[in-house]
Amino acid sequence: MEISESSVRAASEVRVVFGRLHRRLRELADAEDLTPSQSSVLVRLDKDGPATASALAAAERVRPQSMAATVGVLLELGMVTRAPDEADKRRQVLSLTAAGVERLQGGRRVRQEWLAAALEERCTEEQRVALIAALGLLDEVTQA
Image 1 (cartoon, rainbow, N blue to C red):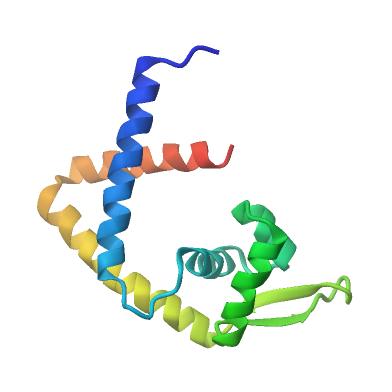
Image 2: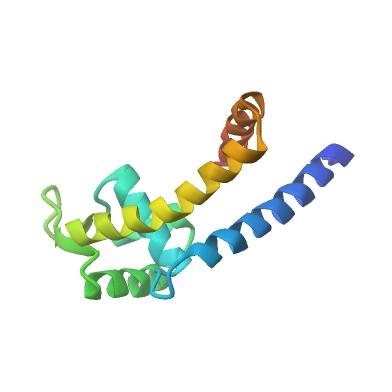
């Protein structure tokens, strides 16, 4: 398969822009903010509901050992809880706690408010609609 010049350029620009955005959002994060891996697990549990550590590892594309370390910290911080799976008592299911939801929403709020204000100030309504569509396409690419 030959990759087009536009695909190479798009890939490069997406990587650079997302890198800048990531750095800017991290600047807004509290010093006590969670690691990206920990935040990602909280977001996934919030979005998809309770899951086993192995299902989270597969979804996040990390080794089960890495997920176990991430989950261990979240359990210690009281962000998630573990309970036996109703369908298979040998497995443990992880769920968000109220503290996990609060932490997730608090960190999101600051970063989302900054980004929403920046988009409002610098983009037209048409540009914001185009951005939403482009992000939908990028999400499809990440699901492959």
